[in-house]
Amino acid sequence: MGVEGLTLIGARGAPMVEPFAARHLIAGAWQGSADGATFERLSPAHGVLVTRAAKGGAAETEAAIAAARAAFDDGRWSERSGKERATLLLRVADLIDRERERIARIETLEAGKPIAQARAEIEGAADLWRYAAALARTVAGDSHNSLGPDMLGLVLKEPIGVVSIICPWNFPFLIASQKLPFALAAGCAAVVKPSEMTPSTTVILGELLVEAGLPAGVVNIVLGYGQPVGAIMTTDPRVDMVTFTGSTAVGKGIVAAAAPTLKKVSLELGGKNPQVLFPDADLDAAVDAIVFGVYFNAGECCNSGSRIIVHEDIAEAVTERVVALSRKVTFGDPLDEATKVGAIVSPEHRAKIDAYVRGAVAAGAILRLGGAPLEVPGLGGQFYQPTVVAGVTPDMAIAREEVFGPVLSVLTFRTMEEAIALTNAAAYGLSAGVWSANVHTCLEFARRARAGTVWTNSWMDGFAEMPFGGMKESGQGRELGRYGLEEFLEVKTVQMRIGRTRAPWVAPSAAG
Ligand code: NDP
Image (cartoon, rainbow, N blue to C red):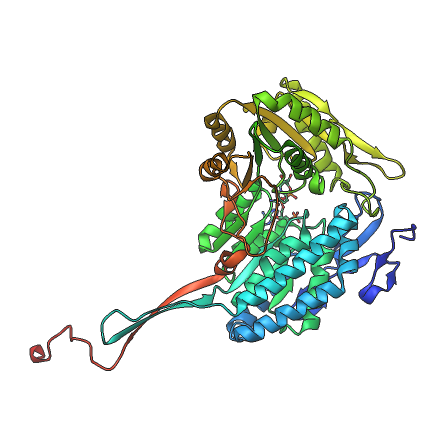
């Protein structure tokens, strides 16, 4: 390190000159791998070593699962009251606030995202811990008092057990916080694997859980790759549930891997999310939301508004305005407070983005802006230009597949039927948006779009209270809101006979 502006921040704000040393948290102990294996993460924007992490194998993964299983089964957390769980989750939220700058800085360096955005994400994550704390005191089932005078029926909600939590690199701390506090509120124990590209902030979260007083073994963190760590987390019979955010391809593999042991699987996968613009829309607001929707987090976002479907009458005007506004977005050094869009997470991913754009142009689409890697003075070319591709037709890969980059596809429509057909043509169904001054148009679209979230005259608002998840190949299950808690709860039926005896099945007089 040592480069001006790149100093990491250690615990309680102390400057840190060494790369972050990330270790596993297993059964309450911080440890390296038994074979001494490590991996490194360089900042994609700056090319400096940010993290050196223990590289987990089968031994570490199995030890972490065993620790979670033991912690769950002996009730050290699962039998705590909702009040006790809530108190601890609130403490964690306060500690996240305390460590906000440190977490945000490492997240920025590992993921390549702008520091101001990272800071906002950490604040949002703390809010999720507080919201989950509130939910911890609401775990309740049903009672049935009308089954007859001698019966009382109870429906109990119980923690599902040991949960494997597998997270991606695009919002490492936030996505972990969309899952873990809800699992803990329910009373579960967990094994968490962050992406190998962004391990550190999950490790810091582990430090905060220890400081907050979470009993050892309730949350275990294993660092490493999908193979073997993720694979064992999805197949081991001691695991009751897997919750995963990432690509649809890996999500399908996890469903198959979890099938032999019939684990519950909750998936938050990709999207090909459209914003549909009718001619009566407020175009100033819509164009800004389009630009935000496609460039936020460099487009590396499951909710990226990666395609717009614009009424023919306004398509050219909207495209021109989007191109003009795109030119004003600040792409550059993630550590610069003014930067809106940072680096692409890896050279391989940048090549994938570029291949989609080239493929679209080869198929007849028209490049209206960008379409190539971006050189940032002093930092090199691990960035991608803001890119607008018009003349996109539904058969093109860029219209159907997740590009996960700062690339907007423009399609057109004439009627509501066409707009709905284009919206629903994608195999994905994560989110969709509609822009119109007419509430009837908005409502019709909202009802007919096959998407887990629909925004009307807005894009990507998010609230802890509102469930989030996808239809079709965007996933199954929901995070956030009350549903986010329910995912981690099992239902048990208790039927109690009270007072009177049950009618004998075999009449006493028939006894021999
Ligand atoms: P992946 O889906 O491959 O990885 C996500 C997580 O799953 C990582 O922690 C990864 O570990 C882990 N993993 C990989 N293989 C397995 C497995 N067999 N069993 C269990 N866990 C596994 O995402 P990528 O990073 O490869 O990104 C590829 C594409 O996925 C992107 O271009 C984008 O389209 C999409 N994506 C969608 C996200 C979303 O928010 N919905 C987030 C990230 C990506 P490891 O990386 O250590 O191998």
